[in-house]
Amino acid sequence: MYYLRIILFPFVAVYFLLIRIRNWFFEKNVFRSKHVNAKIISVGNITVGGSGKTPLVIFLANLLKEEKKKVGVLSRGYGRRTTGYQLVSNGEKIFASVDEAGDEIFYTVNECKIPAAVSENRHKGATRLIRETGINVVLLDDGFQHRWIYRDIDILIFEQRFLSEVAFPNHFLLPTGNLREPFDAVKRADIIVINRKFSSKTDIPDKLKRYFEEKEVFTAYYKTIGFVDMKRKTEYETEEFREQKSLVVAGIAKPFS
Image (cartoon, rainbow, N blue to C red; front, side, top):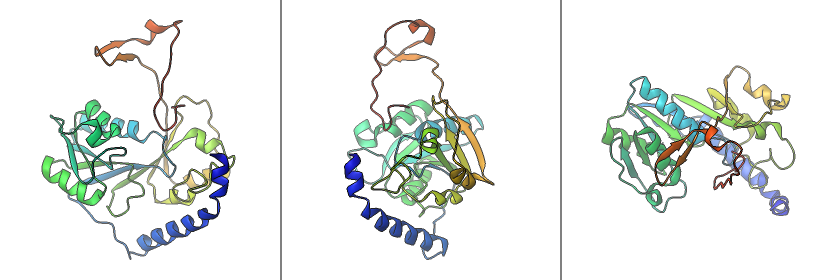
């Protein structure tokens, strides 16, 4: 895989040019973001997978529910076997399977019990979700690059390890590196969340840190609070597994998470 990234390096320039042209069109209002009849909060990143977008969406959804907001989630539905718009839940009943919705949004609705839908077209998807469920706040899961829909708040999340580890090809654009956009795309964000997960690293190189100036920056981390027997729906305290041998199996973007 490492050598393949090197072979694909010439295509980085092509990808860079396409991204720059697209963003320039939006900045000059050649392309225009479309409004919907609700507040839009986008949670996204500029790296490929594994930064913690979905856990942050779940956290925000529960926070907004506590504030008595009518909140729903819209996702592309990565990994699903369907296309087009699909209503996943109205907040009370789930209408789609994991295969039809994708595992991330399915997990979200089970955790939050809120309206949710999947759609490749975020503007049309949000419009329909609002109309069908009556929500007034939409959380866009992985919405940073979907600029056709206007957002009231843009939240950008980074994994701490990505910021700390500057070795080749980590900070290069696709298809050689892990960046979806040049790092200066950070300027579009309103809020930065640095997800330390379980890492003890805190350092951020100055060449990256300067992009965070004048931004609201928050730090997040993961904490193990217990275990769940998915078959029996039984919860266990972490102390019950102390000094026992355990096997960890991960099937996510970055198993370190």
